[in-house]
Length: 189
Image (cartoon, rainbow, N blue to C red; front, side, top):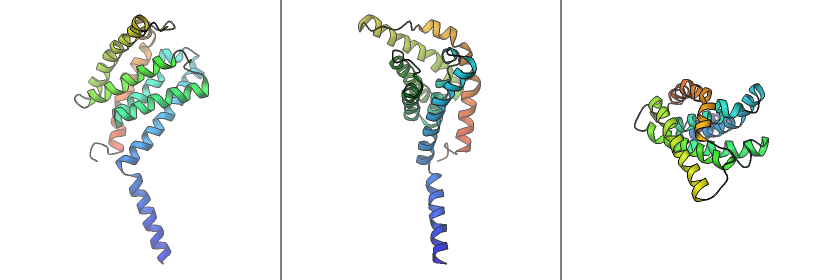
């Protein structure tokens, strides 16, 4: 009888622990990091090597993490997705890796900060615009002040090529983040 009581207590304790905000945050960040690694592979397999620049799949996981869990989660997803994707698949290239890391960190921080003041759609639109402006500034500094090579990276060209990805972000990311917030009961914890 006592064993059964102890088992029930342990199950209840585990259930309570997994339902805590911190556990949701950690598990969600880990899962979105995995999605940030897997989703680009799926797009590359289905649509070829240029699919990353066109559909921006890694951005999706980062933006969802930042809207759902905040800037730290979004930044962790950005960093882990890029580094592990590079280590496992060689993509993005080593030359492109630091630029993409900075770009996704900018988006994670911006969308999280803006989402504290505005709804997720306004935050995302502002992030898409302001993030690219800030990223252009980073490229300008890297090229003109630090003398670093850009390996053909152009903000204007990335916007043109990435329009399908931007459309996917606008259609899916706020909806997914809203559903996650509701299902995980994050707003009321």
